Image 1: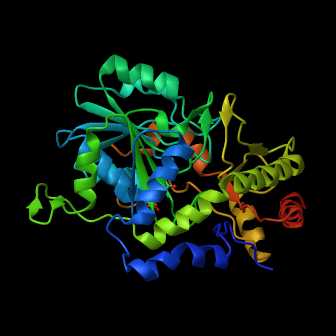
Image 2: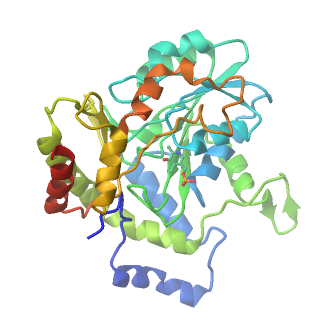
Length: 366
Ligand SMILES: *Cc1c(COP(=O)(O)O)cnc(C)c1O
């Protein structure tokens, strides 16, 4: 039986049908209808945050919140290359210059001790990325941002429901972007959201996702279209009912993996962060001095119909569309390069069975 790297969480067929029944009565399918309003309210409560704006995907949410900050074109934004291309694309598509900071080798988030040396008079913001359910060093980042007058926008696509010292991941920095893509811990099929501190940004973000339309005869801003539909919102309403149980199941699967792969020479597991309640989004394993390389393990799993993922590999500062950028030099981020060449995320989803985890680990250890 094939095991994929992930498997989307879904409510029962009946639960979803029950949720979308209203839509056959209202014939209101998109444009911030009742489901959209409901999901926004439910997320404010679940994420324990004041301002939430939904989007049709996480990428446009990130692009729009960066646009909303109104930085001068050509300004520098400090970020990491150890991420999904979306982060770097969102910066560059806004006419800004990504300045790549290295990551730390414990939790693979931005190495906050290296940020200050990259700040110049052109720097306007930091876009750090929470990875795998681990949180960035939010305290240190805030200290640096305050000292230098920089904005902080988190790519929190991997950090839905994660808490640091009891505080929701949605409440750090000036804003955070969440992705509700089918492969994420919480999904609305495709979807995303921005959470933010300054409530004055709400109007602009709403303008950006709906053509700048403010009334039947009023278009006040040159916006695009990035609205979440009622069917996506309905999926989110259903999935949110089960999210705590899903995260608990991911935690159990992660503990099983840790029990089987922990303490083995050449196999490095990600640290369990102090003061962080994780969502167990991914299970990354770094093969460093093990009897097989990452690529050999990847191939062996493939031969057994098990799909792992080289994630994040390649780095965004070494992929073809950025490799000629003056600011993209993989030599500047040696730790990120080292990890990207050795990391493999193993299959992980709520319903991954113990026996499947045993099978996967047996192949790796054989
Ligand atoms: C998934 C993801 C995104 C993009 O989100 P989409 O909803 O797929 O547009 C951005 N950054 C990271 C780190 C992601 O994992």
